[in-house]
Amino acid sequence: MKLMFAVITLFSLGTFASAQADVRFIVGKGQSYNGERTLNVNFNQTSGGSCEELGYIYTECEEGYFLATPCPDNPLFYLECCPEEYNTTREDCLAEQKTPSNYSCGGYYACYGEDSDL
Image (cartoon, rainbow, N blue to C red; front, side):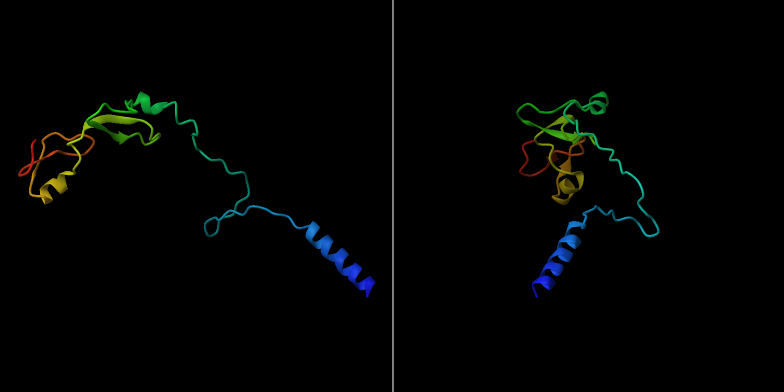
């Protein structure tokens, strides 16, 4: 009995010792993964890089304004600072039966109409 217990224990230890962990990638039908994957990610987003070159220079606005139009490559930089009253889409102004401003800022409009001090 002791011999059988020893054999089972040694067999179990050998089986568990040879177990290995690996990473599996899910690929599309008919595709296989057979190489190293590289990520095209820029983790150094605080410098701005191309965003600043494209005019996305704002990281904060003065009081009464908000950051609008974030840089697609780095959400820490914005294209413009918009006045707080420019906070509604054109469609929402019209739905509220108000007139949208002629000027938009960051795709947002000020609404003119009743109960408006603009």
